[in-house]
Amino acid sequence: MNRAKLIRWLNLFLILEKEQVELYESQSRSAEDYHLARALKRFKEIEQNHVDNITKLIKNLGGEPSRTYAAAGIAIGEGAKVAGSILASYTKVENMLQLNIMAEKKAISHYKRLINNIGDPHIKDILWTHIIDEELHMRWMDARKKELADNRSCQTAAKKEKKPGFNLNIKKVGLNLSIWPKTKKSSKRVIKKSTRFIS
Image (cartoon, rainbow, N blue to C red):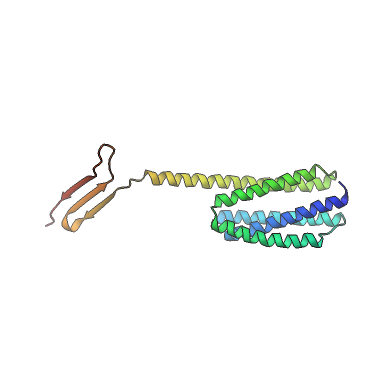
């Protein structure tokens, strides 16, 4: 791959990494769970490091972000802010994490494609570092998503185990009335009534 083409590829990655920075930043601010918010903030810091690394590579190759790339980066970044806030506020956390995982997978795929087409070992080493970071983000979010799903399943099971009946106690008149739903053996309601006079 010649230098001009490599710079174009790196400019594209620069935009994508900036998008991830804005996305994780907005999600971390909107997340209600502290652990999740702190993790997303940490992901944002790592993605910013990727932005810095790619910027240095472009400059070392004698290139710079073109006006077209810069304008696209600003537009995408602003869109990521809005999207991140909406995802964190109006969708289930599991859905938000799944979309983030899909974005990380796509980034990994693009990085590997670029690595396979360049020979510079220094650039390859930096890109592999980025890949490993993205994989760690993806693994953490996948584990968190499964944990949340398991917790929701346990809560649902616990609710189903609770008896749907109710007890009504009126101590002043000495009335104790217990009403439970229909039993399997009979279609009639089971009503137990006992009275006790209070002296």
